[in-house]
Image (tube, rainbow, N blue to C red; front, side, top):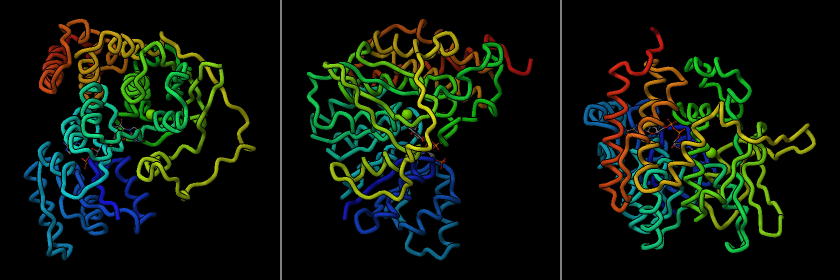
Length: 395
Ligand code: NDP
Ligand code: MG
């Protein structure tokens, strides 16, 4: 029986992970869960899986959780921790072999790092972690022998395409992108898009932050940086192609011109199961992809005018050092402000560009340095938003 820990169990990836675990009850046991503040759902997860350790966002939430569990008749309470330290406890919980990284944003940085340091397999959805500190993460994994397996569907596809191939025979990685809800929208309507419009993803159901990232296509930019670290490729070896049907999850091109694609249904349980059972394959409780019902598979070049975030991410990757951490922090703050209707959709890329231009590049040689770049960028972008230098949506 493999013991697993889930960082972000109440989120979209976290819930899908538990569905996979429930299908393989004699293979995986949930030892620890980390969540934020969705107590109602967490209580259900604890009642079903009985983990020994749980972490929530803060003390007030922990107190509520204790009361709820007692009211549900759970007398043997799990150990309950809080904050980032609590997530680190979950990631390093004794006996755990696999950690699922599914919190959103920079919050996952430290717990993921701690799990890799201990040599644990990390099934990583939380791409921001690799964007911020890709070199430190992959070094920690190399030092301890930890396996870092991608759950992000494109990278999971690339991992599958690369099985059995030689690195020296790889020409390029081709990440597919759905293009999001504004793929063909007019520039003016993109500029003024509302959160409700931006949250309507055409092919995937996901948490709010990544859904907005898909609408700006920053998600694909972050994924280029993620791919750089997972597969040790340069920016020039990573291309993006728009593929609205999201059937081809990504492709590789080999030096002889052969292109290998991974295809499947749009359900994250496939990638999660792959990362949990790797290198073995197990039957999945998912429908087969019916090729005869696919009327067409289209591929287009991305539009740099509609989606400037993609180029911002390539630039940050080429500059290296602390720049990707700055790009990510600016994006996180801008997306949160957009969801709170403090800024326009079109302000997101402007704020990110301004934050990157204002930053003095440093080498990303320690976690402290990247965390400081993250914190100072958050302060800088928040000040810009509060000082009304960005046009308020409702003005
Ligand atoms: P969600 O927003 O659905 O879930 C986020 C999780 O993080 C929740 O469990 C939430 O807890 C938890 N969380 C938030 N704040 C805190 C906090 N302060 N302390 C502890 N936990 C916290 O996100 P997704 O599942 O969509 O995405 C997770 C990651 O996976 C992201 O990095 C995303 O980019 C990536 N990803 C997601 C995909 C998807 O299909 N959803 C696909 C590919 C990658 P709570 O709700 O209890 O507050
Ligand atoms: Mg993806």
